[in-house]
Length: 280
Image (cartoon, rainbow, N blue to C red; front, top):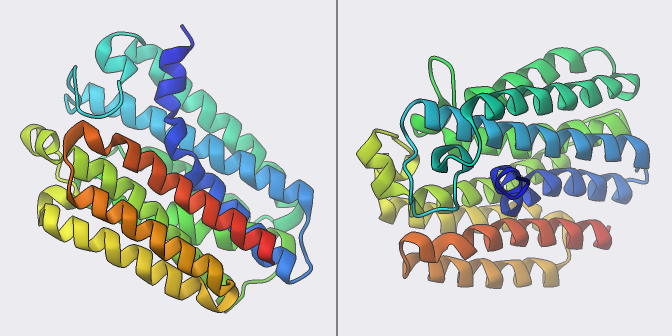
């Protein structure tokens, strides 16, 4: 069956990895150093790494008893018996290996120092859910997203095209990371009760829904402020307006009703990155 595998990829969250590469492309276009082939390879690497991380999250959360049938969020194929744990584990490392193979090709543009960076990214994809200190279970998931879907991909993608790092790109990478962290915040906000029951200590479980809700709002505002020097005012204002509407929905709903907001938060991040790139 194909549908459980598509669900396990969590397509609604994939704009998070895509947005980072598009944002880097926008900066490269503005600086007249855009290179389509390495940009495409960076995009493939980012998407495959995220899919591998999503697969790993599903497998290791099932293995450790953190997912239960009939959960509030989207259906989990392994938990519901649609995919065997062994198949999910194999798929996790197969997709991760494919991502690494594509990553190796980027050495031709960025140099051999990208190799240890790629290893760190690959380890991070697994360490989010597994290992002696799973980041997603220690309140560090949002910080991991900030770095692995914001700071690292935006700066590295830009470097591979431009051959340098800049302060503007660094600020933009933090902004994109904060937008990505908001996607995870919605996910953990929705699942807070279930996570607390099984001992999964996310940021929301540790600090409460009110703090998470305020963090979601502030993250978006800080992201808009960081990107504002390089972004047309109309794009910034439209983003803030949409972000405010999503925040208002988030604070007035619970449980499965938040599922659409998770996808909308990711899509807002994606649309913002596209608008930014097109305005470059």
